[in-house]
Amino acid sequence: MTALDDRLTRGGPLAEVPRYEDAAISFTSDSRLTTQLSGNAFYQWDRAGQWNAQYSLTLNLRPTSAAHINIGPSFSKVHSLAQYVTTIADDSAIATYQHRYVFATLDQTQLAILARLDWTFTPRLSFQLFLQPLIAAARFSDLKELARPARSTLWCTARSRQRGSDRAGDTIHPGDGGAPFFIGNEDFNFRSLRVNAVLRWEWRPGSTACACGSRP
Image 1 (tube, rainbow, N blue to C red):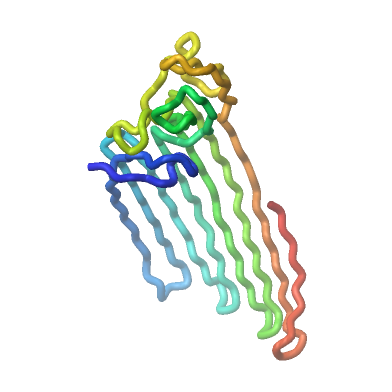
Image 2 (cartoon, rainbow, N blue to C red; image 1 turned 30 degrees about the vertical axis):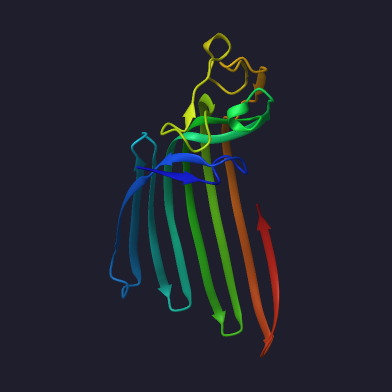
């Protein structure tokens, strides 16, 4: 079975996409204890061969009644056959209203660790810390374009390429005789560290002062 997607082309015509199925599992240890472990696993797939897998594990600690620590990793992998890349204006692309909607196969991996600390020193003084290191990598391949709006089970049909190349970073020669166009290399390796810290002081009832710091 298929469905119509009004977002896949980023403002262009409707595209027909296969319906997906998914499965999920989760667990949580006894929430009454000062140490609690929880985890989640999610998997989504469709008949075209696309899939999305996500996993996370979280450790909750309460060393004292005033402190709460939350820490754990998350991991995800995505294999998409129709990741939007760009739209190219071309008067010869009559079937798609004088525009070529270019897609690629995307393979992406992401690993992150999430850490939170909430500490209440007094009823009027508290501290909060958020920390998230993240690593992500993606590879774009098998460039393709929308063949017809909302009329094809395989919503993207590959065109011929220059010297058989299907990688971003190449000049593409459409198989229907349209004007060649260039697609830049979209592959990436990304690393980041997000940090937010807030010290909150209620210097009198109903009035507070905050000292904040962050690193995107």
